[in-house]
Image (cartoon, rainbow, N blue to C red):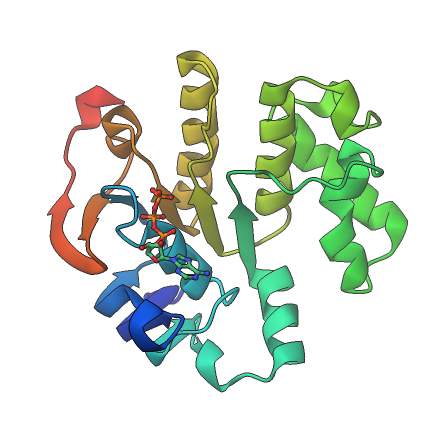
Length: 235
Ligand SMILES: Nc1ncnc2c1ncn2[C@@H]1O[C@H](COP(=O)(O)OP(=O)(O)OP(=O)(O)O)[C@@H](O)[C@H]1O
């Protein structure tokens, strides 16, 4: 197993827009996330948390600085290479979930694998496995409109965790879930971490940050503080 960071941000600055409207969402951010580490990102609204996640996963490009995922510098990759790397190595859970309404839960989970040329049967087997792990195996053949909000959230988590994605990026994955369900989602992320993945989790909830190994506080696009968590008893 390699001990290099799964994710390395070096001197990352992201300016949205230009001229007088320009907003510096990230300013010279340096951040490493090692295999097995869960890093929580906290900070006030507008601090740059979502921008940080988008840049880390190659959905957005930094204005300057570099982003390296498992030794590959995203900023050097052409668009096609970047898309393939995102599908294979990076799992996302977005606030708005982004499930495709015309596909069943299993098909939503299978889609990125099939885009990578994996046969449907194998992709379905993997999807059922990870949906079961996320506690929603029984609704695999239902459409997003036919399941509850909490179940949709678990399907989105399952999609992010499918196969050996090594970098999981989660933006408020517990959303409006009740506390027990939110705790279960955190348990799933934590288990993936313990199996060697790196997780970057944006959360406003201190109770969820307690599951992290480290909490990074962003303020005005800068890392204002970075604290190791040793609250084993809080989990
Ligand atoms: N596409 C964009 N164009 C212009 N400005 C943007 C864009 N995306 C984000 N911003 C600005 O960049 C700053 C950081 O936004 P970001 O969404 O990263 O913050 P956040 O910490 O995730 O906020 P929240 O907790 O409210 O989701 C904000 O000032 C925001 O208005």
